[in-house]
Length: 179
Ligand SMILES: CC(C)(COP(=O)(O)OP(=O)(O)OC[C@H]1O[C@@H](n2cnc3c(N)ncnc32)[C@H](O)[C@@H]1OP(=O)(O)O)[C@@H](O)C(=O)NCCC(=O)NCCS
Image (tube, rainbow, N blue to C red; front, side, top):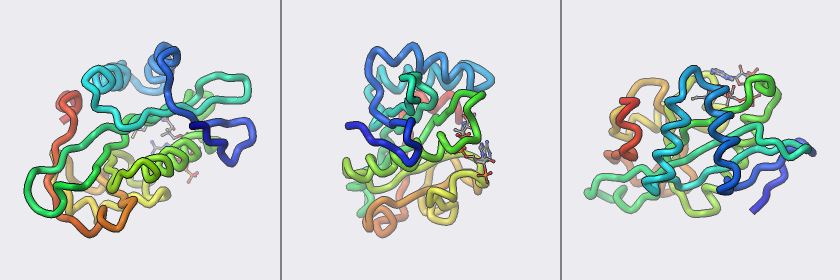
């Protein structure tokens, strides 16, 4: 599926196999180390990715990337049926940052996550950035995870996503390097 965003020359689409080298180069440029590039490769290999998308400019270059991976609710309580995903990592080429590309990519991918039936999205990141997309540290307090504090935020995409809480969750194995 291809979504055209508010910017006329920016397209958000699913990652294809031939994009993987460009995505790795982008992740290495956007983050201080290659940890995030390795995280994405491991999430792909263990089948944990729920959605992986890129932002592509008018010339066809990949300028943004976002990955969402499966988060598993503990097998007790109403929340065990929730479809839960984690947003990480997200990146934009350094020279193209702060021009709205990251926001367009996140908004478009959250829309798709809702379309494919996800109930709840978790993120660990700057509290100054993610609330603009609806992520809420107060909602995340109902999610017991290896992360806590105001940098840990949650966004319900369905009614069940906020109703069937509290829950305890486990992140995909490759995240253990970040705990
Ligand atoms: C974070 C990132 C994906 C945002 O994409 P972007 O295209 O630069 O962001 P946008 O242009 O859509 O939004 C810009 C806004 O985000 C804010 N912002 C960007 N990065 C931020 C950060 N790390 N902390 C807090 N705010 C941040 C800017 O201050 C700006 O705020 P304003 O609208 O109030 O002026 C991008 O900056 C990036 O790749 N950073 C390096 C990798 C990274 O840190 N990823 C996030 C890990 S959680």
